[in-house]
Image (cartoon, rainbow, N blue to C red; front, side, top):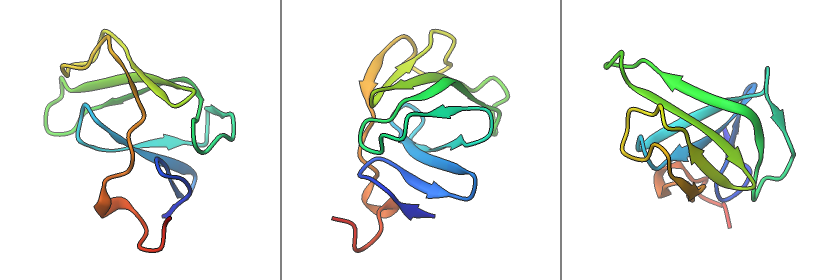
Length: 99
């Protein structure tokens, strides 16, 4: 994967971003979603649902519109119902030569 902006990395068939609620990278697959092409303030539609992991009740559900994460009320984390700016990738996720 390569860094394409301060907030997104590109992988095969997907983009990834840092989720401030889950404290992990979330994939944004190319297949089935629309991307407006804006790498700095991206919009992807429709919403994304990430679930599973070690806790089968874990759910992160959000829309990403103009660089804002809008967490839906059905999220199992504390940020459900909130909107926050898409955060910068953490230092360990950045390419060394990224400016």
